[in-house]
Amino acid sequence: MPAKVILNPYSNRWRAEKRWPEAALALKNAGVDFELAISERHGHATELAELAARRGFSPIIAAGGDGTIGEVVNGLARAAKYDTEPLGPLGLMPLGSANDFVTNLGLPLELAAAARVIAAGVRRNIDVCRVNELFFANNSAMGLEPYVTLIQQRITWIKGIPRYLLAALRGVMDRPRWTVRIEWDDGQFEGPVSLVTVGNGPRTGGVFFMAPHASLSDGKLTFVYGGREKRRDILRLLPRTMKPGKGSYVEMDGIFEHEATYIKIHIETTTPAHADGEIFSAGIQDLHYRIEPGRLQVLVEEGSGS
Image (cartoon, rainbow, N blue to C red):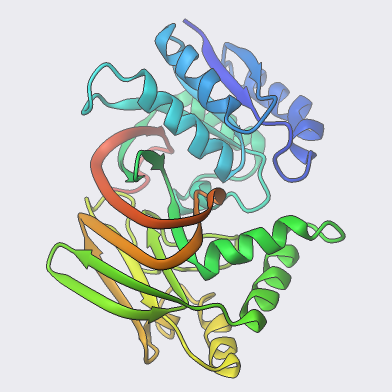
């Protein structure tokens, strides 16, 4: 069977559609035999991936951004015959605005190089995560992070990383807070927070490292919670969310980072929540996170990761 490419033409504000001829040529030049399916609405990529997996197409290639990858992973999960069946192999053609998952895997953003990775067929098993019944590959959050996502979706006059940064500044100035109860493997917390972010990978939003010590293949969720009361103190956090190592915001007072195999969160009032950059609820009160170690097979460069 050939590969199935699932293209989300809307990714990166329709730039994915414009770049598709370049991506198609790259795949053909790399010797990848494929059929194309085009997503036409939110959630359609999930349906297309499920159908392709059931029909035996391999690999399934997500052509879009992080949200497209998340939808395709959910389609692979729906097609699985049993709960522990490996998902994939999944190929990645980065046509999004941030391409965080691709970057976290150390894969090329240049399309010809990405196509050669797919053609080589080298597989790496990584963890896949769930929030309630939704799967995600890279990250999820409640509170400030999806609050910022909703803001950036309304910004149309700039594109790419600057849009994320402007949205983050606007979100910080609003100073939103939520009262939560969090429970995980060996701990619990109850009190006010500005954010709770859960990472499979460290980078999100193009420049932010919201779970800076997260690993895609350690069998653990890495999550961060906390916040600041004053607007100026929240602003001091922002530049340090862009540091992946020493000096990260998780070293600051009032911010806590943990690892867990499950996380349960109850919020007194409703919060928006996202998975892989896509808002799945504008107002939710209960979130249950779980990890499924090593279940997702991704096509990678030889020797990448462990």
